[in-house]
Length: 325
Ligand SMILES: NC(=O)c1ccc[n+]([C@@H]2O[C@H](COP(=O)([O-])OP(=O)(O)OC[C@H]3O[C@@H](n4cnc5c(N)ncnc54)[C@H](OP(=O)(O)O)[C@@H]3O)[C@@H](O)[C@H]2O)c1
Image (cartoon, rainbow, N blue to C red; front, side):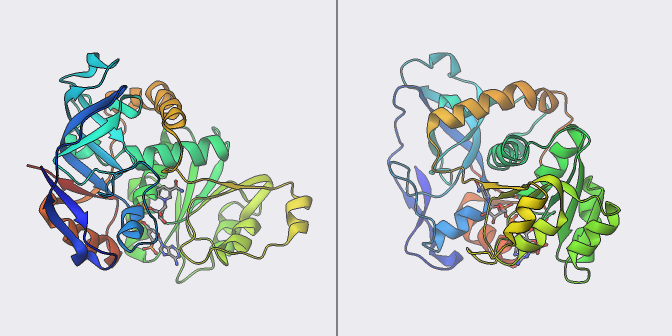
């Protein structure tokens, strides 16, 4: 099969089409003929050599796919022939990919495979971090950085479905306008307005219940200022730095919680549990045509380098997708 390998750590040009044997599914796994694979920021970190695949995972990049199940391992024969999308720990940038049956979700007719492929990574990440770790609940106001990112656009969409008021930050007025169009209640251009002031004004001093933070570094202390009493700070990335200095007294005074998580290294059992929750709570909205990913662009699999270059240029809104075949 054709797959995209990372020839060596480096820029987008190190992503090269190559030939690999078709992987074989083990027990409780399926082999998917990939129609499309989502591109995620962690793929870029992996390409640069900064985010190695967890033990046992494919070295081929790609954390989410959609396609048709063409063979199965023992115990999951009922999935043969089904259209699925799946969260995978690697191997998505390829014509065939093995996925745990437990992380597969059925793709309804209302969703194109190229749309379905753009959902698992952001859906699982936002579900785990905003709702489970951050305990976001109906009526909460939340702050999400990177409002037009893959993660940010999914957070806006889920927030709207589950009764949240989502404030976002973005790096330009154009992106702010797009975020509001997509459903953000308020968007702050962080180059022009201190987001701490912006949140204080929007919430009339009450602060937000949750901050979903993909920025880290000096943002953490500023995020804490945005939290109201009992607020939750959830870290999912550290684009501005791995360390933060924070006033502990604020944590005590307002009873704040700091938490965070990384999805990829979690075991299949955990991911299966999340998939089951999503199947019950979120998937009915997908089947009812009320939740779709925001797609920025599609690239053929062979042009994975161009897809990465687009993501690194930072102009995209929503998801970048590789289409296969
Ligand atoms: N922990 C997990 O399990 C997990 C899972 C998936 C993804 N992630 C992380 O989540 C983040 C988003 O992923 P993605 O695939 O959605 O990526 P993406 O679409 O490329 O989005 C990256 C976003 O980061 C924002 N950004 C970059 N530098 C910034 C800065 N210095 N200050 C403020 N905002 C900044 C950009 O916003 P502007 O262009 O508006 O500045 C952009 O919207 C990535 O950092 C990724 O590693 C974590």
